[in-house]
Image (cartoon, rainbow, N blue to C red; front, side):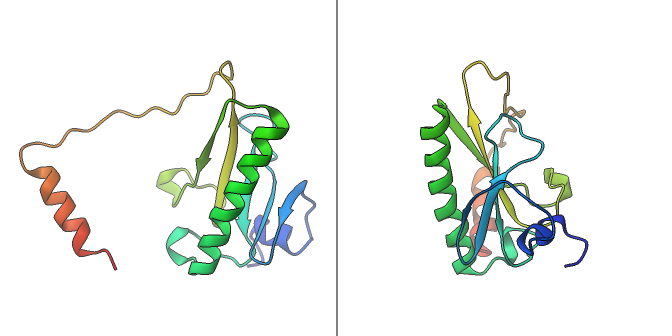
Length: 137
């Protein structure tokens, strides 16, 4: 995809501070990090979101996430990390190329992931579960 910044990184047309690469993915430092050491893991083939990944690519993303999260933890001494994958603009995805964030977390970093909690009424939980279960392949 010619207009995709991540595809240009894969092609070597845009430099990146790469930290990991295999046949399916590349990981590099985010240029606008939540915390220093914030990494991205991208697929080498262009996919817009999670649902279009092939099984081997999905597995590669998760295996890379484990390796990168471990390396970030050891190298930076962070107290934890967030793995974040936004899918679709409404979910906060800015670059429309599948990618996962590995964000090192520290007790004093000031970041909070918080949302308002919804509540199910009556039998709604079972109804939602049944509706979703029917669509599982």
